[in-house]
Image (tube, rainbow, N blue to C red):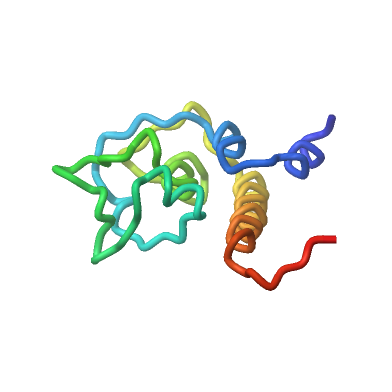
Length: 124
């Protein structure tokens, strides 16, 4: 199975997380300074989400929902295009790999947002 086909067969965002290299974070909180658009599945796992100049889950300089953090937070520091001086990844995703992961995330997020949010949808 080629890499592109593997992306096409992913069924959940949790599966997508497995494609992101592990990182070691010093807890600088830089990733928490940006508003994000988590998928409904992620909002549920985090116990909600709001942003008021920083993520509400940034508590005492650390992520209070680190094990349940959303896709973009996992990607921050693990990609050549989203590097952080205080994060160290097992390896850094290339720009191409990052773009493909983001495309897949957007597709899955869009699918999740369509389920249960449009009661007029008819399934054939």
